[in-house]
Length: 183
Image (cartoon, rainbow, N blue to C red; front, side, top):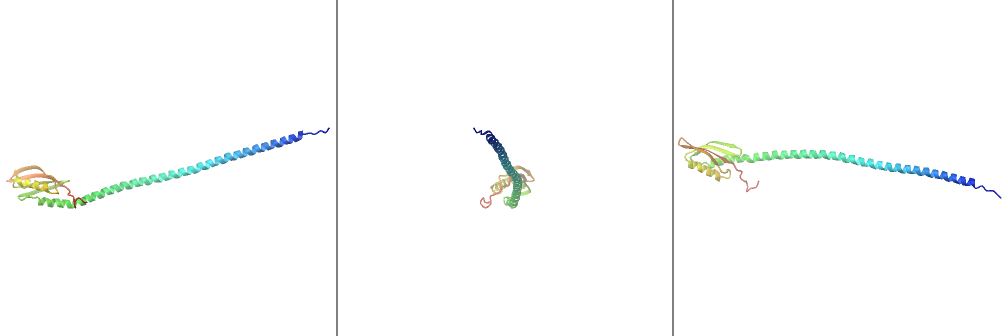
């Protein structure tokens, strides 16, 4: 009978399978390592990109905050300038009004009455003067009250001195609407 030894063939096949298994295992491990390294590299790259975006947004926020501060400062300066401009316009607008007030003081002056002092403090005029009769002081007060430039006068005192009536009164100044209320 012929002897056939199958053992070395099986051993060679088992050794070859073992080598193939080890090389497949080693290839799988290398491939798994490459996949893990690739995934880690991808996530690191994504994190770097996101960090760059975040840095850009922070820089833009800082720049916008500076611009917002500049805008707020410009708005504050604008408000100050508008307030100054309004004050100048008010002064320019009241300049002719003072002249009109003094002109009106002469127009409402009755006969037999004269002023000794006329003082303006703020929006009030204080008048000291002499009149022949109390009726002249009453006429002055009535004329002031009927004027569009003055409010209701307030008589402070009336005293007799040398056959004359010395009086003191104050009257508020009004701002009449010009051109039918248009400014």
